[in-house]
Image (cartoon, rainbow, N blue to C red; front, side, top):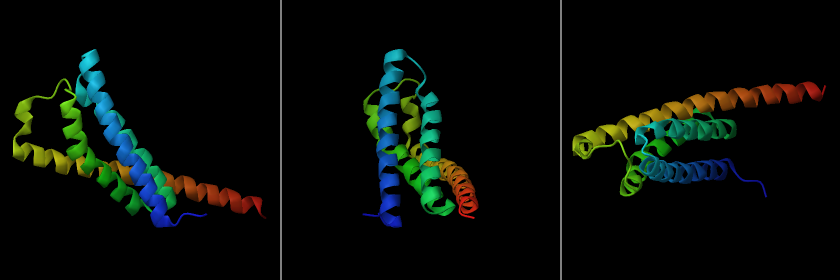
Length: 140
């Protein structure tokens, strides 16, 4: 059975959401156990946003990739942050949790997610177009 484009995107985003929240929890636990600064985990999150962007870009468009990245960023900045906070990350002070700062962080992380998703989407579209050109050349 061939999945529709919407089903493909739902799967890509769904797996990405699970991955980013699981990564948050893992980074939080490792941060606490190994005493490293929790915000270093940001690099891993950005890689997840970009990877989901590549997949969404290949399946649909750069816009879909940006939207997927934004969704991941939003969920990470809300649910992921809440869950990982319960795991006790190191390097994040309670002072940061004033409501205005939290709202700002949610907006910024969502925008970063959109940007990383879009960059991944551009890469995914580029790879897809090169593969299509290569395949067209083989059929001639």
